[in-house]
Length: 622
Image (tube, rainbow, N blue to C red; front, side, top):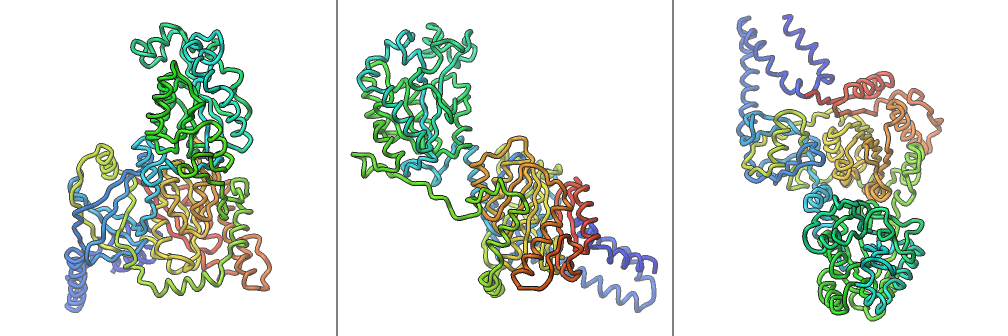
């Protein structure tokens, strides 16, 4: 009898138990069932009846809800945070976002174990996967994203001046006599000066890429062979020397950037050039300088391989002879770039079609999308952002009709694939990530389910605050996918340190009505990165921790409730704190936490208890 009473008390508190504990707790009742068999005949009959029902249900799950996955796509997540697992749904497997499955990977060490994971059905992480693929392939743009041959957008264009230094450009430079013939014949210094003036005037970026060697040539990458051996023997481009300084006509001006640590022929290896191009959102590069058939050509080839739109300058480059110049500009340049004169490049930057190139090059003027990004929410306060979202883009009747439409859809058969995100936390999950990183061959896997969502309590509430830290965002994404459109208010609060993880999951944040991201990584996000991330939805990004978790939650709830009352012409006075909100309205809210911080969980739990809102959590404690 005591066991029965204890089990009932345990059931009342089951919502506060961790998911793994709830999942395995039913095994404890086997002992209770066995004990009851030794009581009265009626107790034995009842107990055995329920035991056989339970056994039948278990066997049903073993036979009909266990599926073999012969082909599974595994992808390593950014920063070693885990892996994405994606498969095409087998016959009879009809999942819904937010539900969970148990997965067995036999070929992994410890592969006989079954592990639970939340589901997500929308393959919107394709952009995140492309980000990983670009890094692995050493590209800036990859595949269909490559910018080659596209229109020239001046705000996304950079002129790269390669080695425009005194050694080449000025009388007295050790290499000037070698190149002065071509320089004088095409007027390259004046041409480049005029082009960079145009670029600065209309907002294009000017990058200076000098080559600089230490006095002992210790940073020369190949100082016993070829042209780099000549640089060593002639002691050219020595750090802090006149010869290594920029020629006066092309000296850096305000707003220009200098490429650092270029000590080889190609401007990319070992330097910060790619970082500068990425941070500034550059898609087109216009390349000129020295030597046409050496450093310029090497940089053009690499820029082309990285997926950039490349324009080479016929009369903005020079080398040792007219024959070499002609060979490069008429053959090699055409293979890896669009050759232009400096005047034609200036026309393209102005948004004009270059003369004589009407059919071969396009222009593109900057178009700022009419999204929240154009309001520069990086400078908005959190309160201003929420007011903007709730007043400028409130829940309209059209969204209510969308809810009616979704209520009539077959959401279970909406997608043909399923994916789970596996955090590299325990030995099993880290082993999986290591196998993927090492390129080991994968084989068939097993999946059992689907089962009810770990956050099953979400269906009892109208408004959901999905609070996540790090990879804990994945169950939150599943819940957002489970309640599409306006069927629930879904507000995501996400604390994380990984910029790559943020980029990977950013496309999925569109499912939230508001996504408040608190990024605390050491490497700050650039303005271009912020703009690209926020383009995915109503996303606020603060590059620091929230001042107060409780204050953030209070603002969210009061702002949403006040906006709702205002939209419905309610006579209620605006609430300043959560406790001023009607108790029934507060009960419509639920806070769901998933992450690895017990401190955050405790703060959220206390807040929910004090304010009368719902609460559920899953804490990683591996």
